[in-house]
Length: 192
Image 1: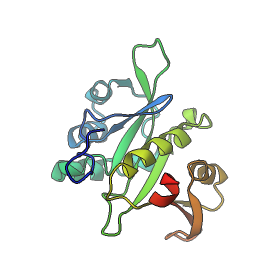
Image 2: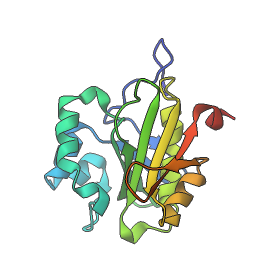
Image 3: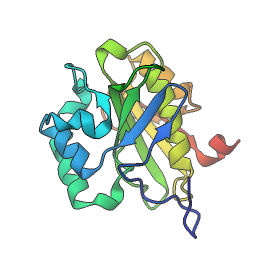
Image 4: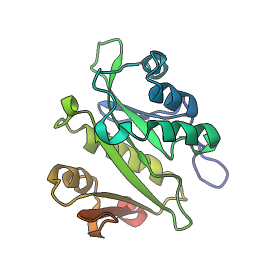
């Protein structure tokens, strides 16, 4: 990734990609998010993937209009909100949209970002959340502005907890909502 003079990565754009072993993460831009929110037939072609009929994941769907509005108003924050998780099998012409991952906005004054993820039911249990979280953690820590990444889940969701712990995130206490727990990884842990 190319860095600016102050060693922070440039703003992600619609051509930015984060590739992992099996996945490609594509950041939502205002245009892409609007196509998603309006269930446009162009959405899949804009991403270059097949969009399953079960799209969007239940935890992501209710936020699509708000995300589109936000990214249309603040295009310089592309990359600090939602990313689309795509999976491609070698030899096939297009990948498949399997989920969403992203931050709750750019780093705050203390260098903290919060992350969340959602995988479509048909694609769960294949390690996609773990792999995409690892890719996005690496992308975020390429920015010197990011010092800490946290995530929250319900205490009775061991699979979600496992996704975070497999990426070096440690339990640090209760989450904001009742019944949730918070995990985080610091820059020092990531660099260690």
